[in-house]
Image (cartoon, rainbow, N blue to C red; front, side, top):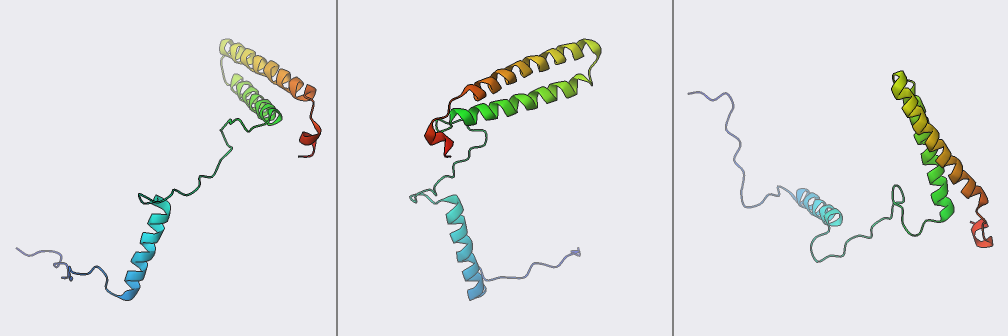
Length: 124
């Protein structure tokens, strides 16, 4: 029987490195993996704090209210946009939901407007 492809070339199983350059590349790859995967016994790299989608205790009330107002405005817009795509009975329901969202947005805006800032907060 004739094989359509030749046998693979024979290699020396004693060393995976063909030259000093390949050894340097392998060491660099090991350092990179150690850096990103944090080997056992090493201290993990400091975690970057991300503020997106995390409501933590260090948020100020003003920041939370601003995010709330923007989220409610987006939800109202989405509800109103979808209301135009629905049949009449569902359109009324979705428009009502949009109006409830708008009322919540108005209340949040009123709280934000009534909020008194201390002198330390105005300098930020």
